[in-house]
Image (cartoon, rainbow, N blue to C red; front, side, top):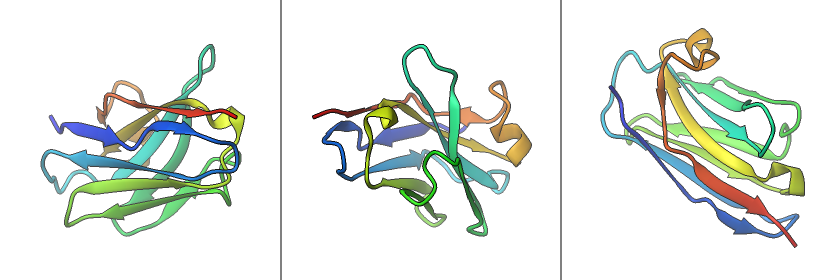
Length: 122
């Protein structure tokens, strides 16, 4: 079981930027995809972005052009750079690691971090 620890959450003003980090306690050849989910109060958990071991990225339409996901395989760490933040970006952000994109999309598969709160407020 891979342990994931997120950091970087906090209070941000609208239009501001913030960078989230997610570090894995150990590396695995079976961790081919890492990504970020978010969940706002009363809302369904939303897949924000994913990145493969080879660096192929995908983004939700709501964040495309504003957020950038990156991965340092040597450090077992994935990042989420968030720019031009909006009030609707307020949520708990969760890091996830899995073997496939399918596993990323299944809540019972892969490994989850504990989550970090991002609050966008003026």
